[in-house]
Length: 339
Image (cartoon, rainbow, N blue to C red; front, side):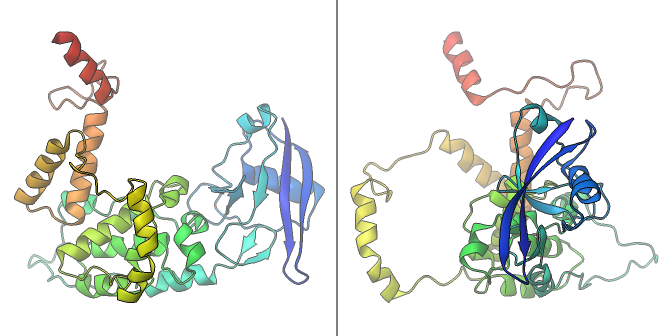
């Protein structure tokens, strides 16, 4: 197949930046990384980029395609080429560019080290001398976080890091949750205190771009939410507010919000649809003593089962065991028809 690419070239020694066009012949099964290899081998040997495993494990080949972070070894090019699109390839964001598609990962690793990414054991060895067993329910809390391959795609798209380069970032905080949620770790409170400081948990802007671009389904924003829940559950202070002076300066902005009915001051107050179900779920989590991250994971599993019409009595291996997903609106229509 014929593949066309536009690649941003950059030379840090001169500061020159240019968008170059390339047209290559590639196999139908080629990924973006395969296409870059062809460009480098047959067209322009000066092109610089990182790669290693080619199997979505090492995280080396993170870059941007059309302004969104991707793993080059995961991105198939067939459909893109068939549609006649010419993607623009560039280096990841929020990290200094060294050359072409290669970024300086030193700030990335500095923040990774700052969250102390290693287990600090606080458990007693079992008397029988065997391994320390952890309940599966507890491990479910950190299952996604353990999948992180440190590719940096989430960091590339983080709005909070763009506005505050000192922000720890989604990758580091996701790794932090991996240890906060591990029942074997003895430094949970100390970690939460550190992560709740300035440039920590509470500076996330909740844009969810990190979830959207993560190639491994780690969902870093969800990890940050778990850290916030754990911080509150463990009695850590919610971050300081902006202070009296800053609040007074923003009074004009607050008044404008109220004028446009965006301050939540309507009377009678707006009540979300089906709010009773949400409150019942909160009461259930509280009754089962599943505060913090454990409650968030329980809610995720419950919502997943509802979305896919989960039926616990159904044989998961029988024919037709995977019913068609339905939407709440469909249920509402059925109820109206029955009435």
